[in-house]
Length: 98
Image (cartoon, rainbow, N blue to C red; front, side):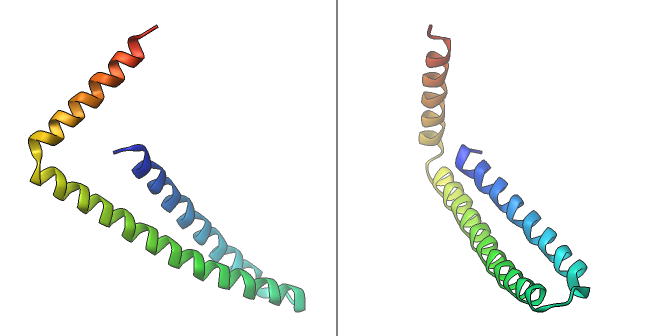
């Protein structure tokens, strides 16, 4: 997994947590009265829906990226091994250098 995939996974996890917490907040605040409370709940509900859509889109992009990477590696296995070896060697040289 590269850094981009890790950050994407973390972002998806964080978005899911925000969505879940927001849904709990909406349920807990159902008894609140007043125009401001109602407006806040409506706004939060709309924002929550857009966050869900963004999360779904992000998950789809991550899956597409993983499938594309898998396809390239399967089509060029020896080149992929060579590139991975070269990058590992370069990182090793840079890390051990003073």
